Image (cartoon, rainbow, N blue to C red; front, side):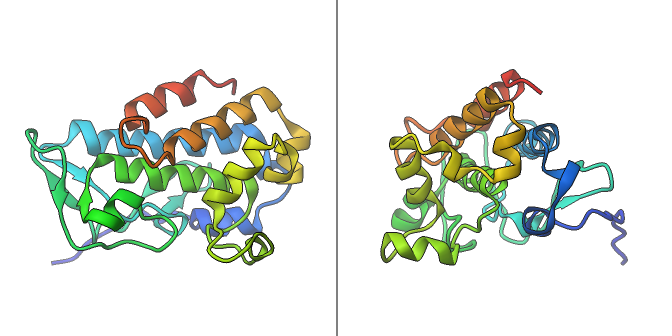
Length: 208
């Protein structure tokens, strides 16, 4: 048996984040990529039967074609959720820095674990920093992109969070909207963290 995949010439989001320049850093491209990922997750969470939790949403598992259309890849850790199930219990898997806290602490994984990981990816897209970026060491041990973004958001140091090209190019109202959305996606409380459908709706409301 052979598996045949489309060739995606744009590489993955990890490469895009750290090697992008010029036109590629503009808001419409970032916005489109975010919507593509959210739509893919919404399909897994709501249109598949049984539903699918990816469990390893991270930049290297999101591929791009030449037009910056984003595609989820690597379903090796995916788990199935029946319609009546709110979560499943499983050994903790995934990539450090992207694993939702409730999953890491209780081994209970739900759709909202993917939402948390998606929020981390949004922060990386906006800042051009890695989840475990070495620059966070100046803030103390254990700092990663999640508490770093929360700190800057709380202190309204917005320009320090966005990559200079993205912040200067704007639109800043939409950028701040995406930042607030990423912050909500990474809330530790499951009752506060939105579903991917809610996230997608908010993304579509941001000006493109």
